[in-house]
Image 1 (tube, each protein chain N blue to C red):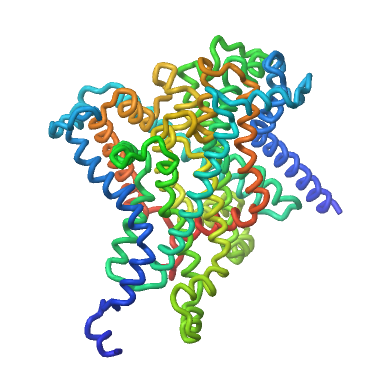
Image 2: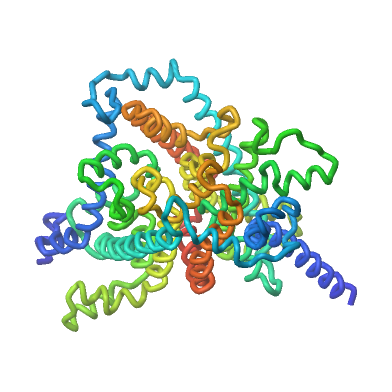
Length: 305
Length: 283
């Protein structure tokens, strides 16, 4: 048996193959039904004119050309989503790191704070939370009465103002910094204490300790979080659907909301499939870009795979 | 002495700041709870106050539970519960088997398939929703509760990934010892490995529960008759002033929708915090 292993390097036992595929069969079934088949169909539809009622007609690249050359709303939604992602992700990560560093000390009752800060993250996707946000920042809401009490009278609510509506939605995302905070907290605990000790011996200032030790040691965690959060950020839908319905004047129209409207309000299925693939490409470019820059700023410990 | 005092002041300051931030974080929830106890007439007169001027504990909950469009809220609740529990069980068991195969068996195309798992993590599910809708329509599954379970039932990348991480931390000698004792694969998995990866299974179950319970996008597209609505869809309908003009009922049912999540969180907090940390560092 040993002999056969050395001759053919990648030799799989028949029995192993059968066992593995049996165990994977539920996942493979789901993957084919909910991912692979939809992907193939979606690529095909993205090259067609299709409104669900008639058979799809092949129109080549026209959907893609239409998005980039004619569709102003496409650019609007793209702009809103980029703004959302590029402001929210750094803000949330910075805030999460800041709080994690505050909590990475020896105080009593830290567990309670950790829990309190984490709660918004677990319920953030709920419609209930969007309901609260809509009311709090709406015309008769808490924030309006607070602003009035402070003498900053507003004619329209923050959600009714094209300049601030997206800000309110971003704020809701920052509010959910808890899960990133937990990840940072556990990463901070992994940093060997000896590093800090030698810095103290050298008499390094706190800022120097942070920028020379803490931050570099955290870069793998930051990198991983950055990618996941960017992907998550691009799929924002519920908030802009429930709180503002994309308004006022499309100022909170997220890309996925626009895609949804194209498909299920206008029944422009082919076009919305093209929009979907453009989004996949954008996310792919972002991820690729981050991986390319990885070497220049992500610090992996020597000896780690 | 002076140093000790300084440390004490530091500690007090820290707690004051931490409590203030905690209050801000939790304020929206307290506000929701308080508002659910305010009457519709006075709701916006004391919008910011967390203590209702006039307590009205029952009215909003009664009117909220009465439902909308002839469907009682308990129907929405049961729909959500059914979809969530079945979806969660399927998701966790399918993911467990997949994770075992990926981490313990060497098989043909294993790497390619694992690449597919990771790919589904990178592509937002929202992007697939149009073709998914069309497939479900062809299968006559649109507007059924099954259509809401299907996307979850066969496992997901996040869960497989989490469990693979746990499996890899368990020495293979344990499996081998069990196999020498005459255990088959399934027996090894359930008798030896499952007890060890219990934290990962519990963490996965909680996350699956949260995500399916709060899922809004897919139900919005896959289901259209009110009788089959889950809670998020129902709340969305409560929110529409044209079909339901009762803020009290909306707030009360929003509280109800969050209760199972909060309850789960209180019971399983430890697993959640450990699980998310585990998934984060090793990525």
